[in-house]
Image 1 (tube, rainbow, N blue to C red):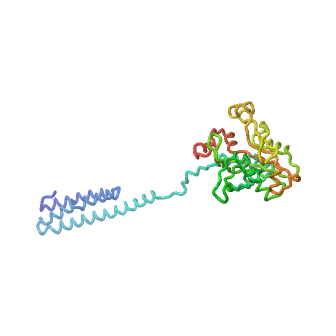
Image 2 (image 1 turned 135 degrees about the vertical axis):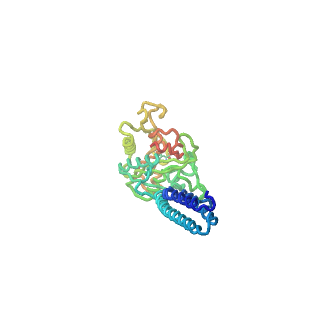
Image 3 (image 1 turned 90 degrees about the vertical axis):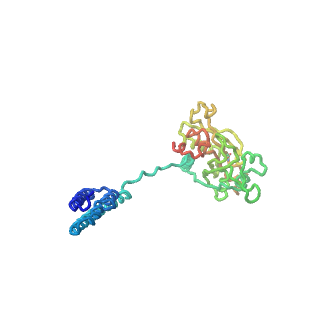
Length: 352
Ligand code: DAH
């Protein structure tokens, strides 16, 4: 620090502080660093202030000279600071702009495409096979009337076959008249009521039963229904159709077989099965060593059903079949538990 009254020392101090400021201020890297340099050069403990404090101790003749030196020092430092501040502000703004810029040319990471659910895939495959055989795809409601689900299909009230279907009734209208359809067969009636033969439709869809969930049963599942009505339709047409369909879906090595059965809406009725796709008929755990996998039910449309929709059984005849989709999906993809299909576990779904 200058000795009081020492003009030369005060001037020397200002000169060296100025030299320092000229070097340091233009080199400041950030606005913060610049603020620090400004405070050191012009603030409370700066050389400028101590030089000014020294003025009063000088002889009166020397005072203006030191006063001018202090002013010159301050003006130059302020000018240096202003220039540096302008430069740094501009480059910090440019930096901020750069940081915030959205570069649309960078491109995204892309969307991962999902795929259709396994049941939907098999559903569509079946539709394709039947459309290829000349069928149309038909639909019916999932909330159905007793007439379509049972009565017109020759399940009279109190018929024991109704009990087999574990119906879920809906509290609408008369008691036990509105229900979640227990099978896709009601679409047969809806179509026959609307159109006259020749008819060839398939009706895939969701059906509901009061079933307890286990490896093969679920209260919500899917079926596909088929119906052909024309003149002179025979059991041979039905058997040939099923065989053709099984070949189309699984290839020529897989065949079908039929066993007698009973359904109220077909006469005669059959159950049909296809060669086990896993062991090709040799017998394995999937087919319980039988070499066959049960698919569904079928038969010739019962005359009572034709009569219910206003067709003359003497003139027209038809066949119908129906089978579960979920079972088929399980078989095709080796899914042990039907519930796996509905849990929504993305790790499972992603595999297909
Ligand atoms: N609807 C029957 C069921 O869910 C399956 C069925 C059997 C459909 C025979 C048919 C048929 O069209 O002819 O158990």
